[in-house]
Length: 298
Ligand SMILES: [Zn+2]
Image 1 (cartoon, rainbow, N blue to C red):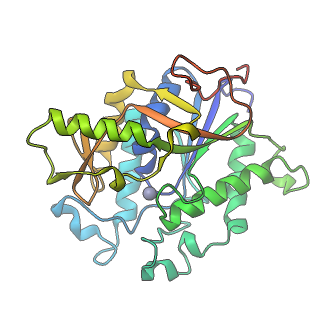
Image 2: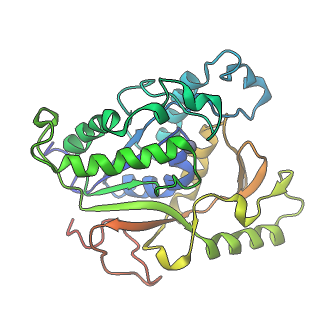
């Protein structure tokens, strides 16, 4: 696809909303800078808990229409971020949300957790070979916080990166492509601690029943494993708007957001990454890479 922009970023996520929470500012920034940003979401998030009472009837244990509804929420979020290339792995509804670890939903034969990695990965290989991203972003091996779909999304992404560059694998899926850099999403613990302290001090009363403690926030890592910090401050409003579009899942209020646990968390415009494949580029003034394409010559 020679007509695509020089810089190409692919993000692999489990559910609609994960991309906006974790990478919304990064996605908006790279779109604004002219990069091609592709989002692949592995499930429709059918098992999500629903925040607005008036939409509770959509839930999996009632009408089971949440997945279709979330297709619309994701499309609205992508409009806010300016992302035009968003896809569901294998097509919308191919793999069902597996629910939280240990629940009966994990046993459904159509859920992502029951899907062998090698059955799902070729769908992503086709996307990688088509879009030919230099940079891929996904979760760490624990999926950030142990959700089965996040773990599976990580495994599928990492397998697809390996398979995509193997010329012997499924030549029908396109020319081999090697992804130069792979990052895992992360949050440095000190950053979250500081942000929570600032929120507690500055906002009384808080707009939610409580503020999260640092251990309520998923994906925390020691500061020294963080490779890259992307400053998306100019796009903070875009990120907040994208999160607001996921209204069944996220309540946004000023500098806070809350999930269905109703605990306020900071809504940061700086987003953090751990480089696990490829060579780091020059660090910025923060001492970390400040551009996911650093060192790639594009
Ligand atoms: Zn998720």
